[in-house]
Image: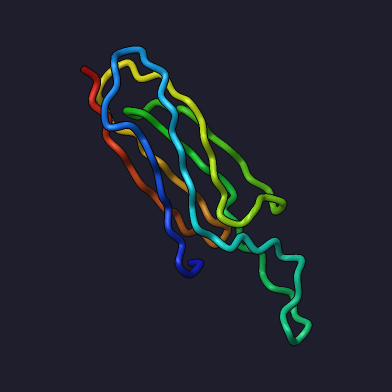
Amino acid sequence: MADNVTPRVRVPRDATAGEVITIKTLISHQMESGQRKDGDGNLIPRSIINRFVCDFNGQNVIDITMEPAISTNPYFEFQATVPESGTFSFTWYDDDGSVYTDSKDIAVG
């Protein structure tokens, strides 16, 4: 498990039915490509977030596959249509098998 990995998500607290909202996500992660060497000349093992998934009430909203060229602390901003009140679930998958999650509720009025 990578050190100091922190997911952050911003979702509006409420919306109207059918409204298109903007969701912002950021995860603090070093994203080591596996191509650099340490001070002793040894390769630093690859450690990247390789997949990001967002679901709303169990239905997939976005599914992103990331490669070693992704930047440190990957940030994503995307839009989703909100048909009803519910929960957005966010999942980040690390090369080392670690899974980081967060969720945010939204109320539709």
